[in-house]
Each structure stands twice: as structure tokens, then as C-alpha cells.
Length: 304
Image (tube, rainbow, N blue to C red; front, side, top):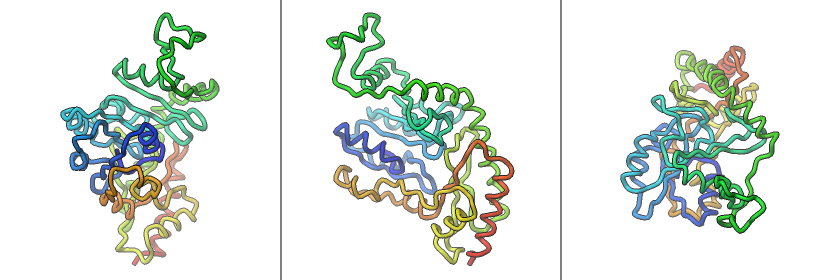
């Protein structure tokens, strides 16, 4: 599984009695690399969870080709990448099955929390549907909700309430508009390339659906560490995460469950040199200007 992800991803693997084996990111990236994936494959590998972090595509086409050639299933974690694409193809359609999160701050929301599952294979999708609804085979024409003898297996109830579904329906209808508005802010950060000698945009593609936006810091040109620098930008009123702590190999509670103690050096290096700007579809020219001004001000204080 991708080494940069939410605890929910790892917990789902563990709760299903499986053993997570972490895969490093490609250099200078939050995304799993294809070669890094191959480095971690073993004869016991059965599925790879590929996280499309921050709303940018992992090299999912390459990973799927390598995985399927080895009879390994691919689960796309699109929790931060609603509506994102790679070479014109929607993320979530490359692998065998995909999961999306609709919690607050996502490009597609249902309110507080929630999610969506997608699979092109109808049988696989139905299995997921039954596991989300107490084992009920609702697709059968003769299904009787009042006859538990027809249920398939034990399962929990993950139904979303109707009001949240209504919010999700409205949010989905404006997904393209939301992505376009978020991309305007991300593109505005391109100005850092010319104005900053310390912070560099991590880059974007036309297929991105930004959830947050990483900036890469030249730590050798600072008189403070990266996290203190980012906290100073935060103190100027700019929404950001000074240090992304979602590197699974650093979580003590995972060590008893993981296949080994692989440290994920590429991911650790990138996290040590980056911080993440929060992105919102209501940001406009003023927020772009405020962000650039705050970074410039803090650089003036801490530049070596």
C-alpha cells in the first residue's frame, strides 16, 4: 500500500486480517512510484492500494499493468482525488475497484463524512454493496428486505443518511466547477517560481483535482527549519499544514501489523522539505495575493 495515506486505509487492511506492506513514493512526490512498487512485491502480494494523494494522479497506468501481470488486484484510493484524471481517463477507472471519501473539505462532499465505491466489474461491486448493507443482495429481483434467510453473510450497516445524500447529490453536480476554482488558486502559486528563492510549487497537471497543494522548501537557504518557516506563514493567516504527518512508517501503532519496518526514505525526504497549502473553491485573487505576500514576508525574515 502507499506509505502516505490516512489511518483509515491501513486500518481497513488490518481489520480484514491482511498484512500491510508499505511502498515508497517516487522521489520528490507524494505518489507511489511504479519501480518502488515492484521493489516491494513478494510472492504473497495479492492486492496493491494506490493512493492518489493531494488530488494528483499516481502513475496508475504503469502500476496496474505491472500488478495485473502478476495477478495482483489494484484498489485505487481516490479519497483526495474526486474528478481527477490521468491522460484524460478518470482516476478510479484504472484498477479493479476504487474508493472515494466525501468528508468535509473534499471536492465532492456529503457533509461530515461518507464515501463512494466504484467498480467496473458488477460482481465485485455487488460484493462491496452487500458488505456495506448487512449482507443484503439488493440487486436480486426476488430480494425481500424482511427475509434475513436470503442475506449472504454477516456485515455491518454503512448506510448514509438521506440529508447527507442530498448534500452529496448537490455537491457532485458542481464538481467540475469546484475543481476549476481550486485549480485557479493552485495556478496562482506558479508566481513563486519567479519571486521566491526558497519555496517552489510542486507542480500540477490539467487532470488534477487539488485537495491541498505542496510547496517544496530549499531548507539550505533558511536560518530556521522547514516546519518553523511554515508555521510563520500560518501565523500570517494562510491556511496550511506545516508538516504532513501521514507517513505510515512513523506511526508506532502500525509496527505490530506491518510486514516489516521499511522506512520509506523517498517519502520521508519529501515530507522534510515540503508543507501543504490548504485549497478551497472559494479562494480567489485576494487569497492568491495574500498567500504570495505572506511567503515573501516570512522569507525576508528567515532567508539565510
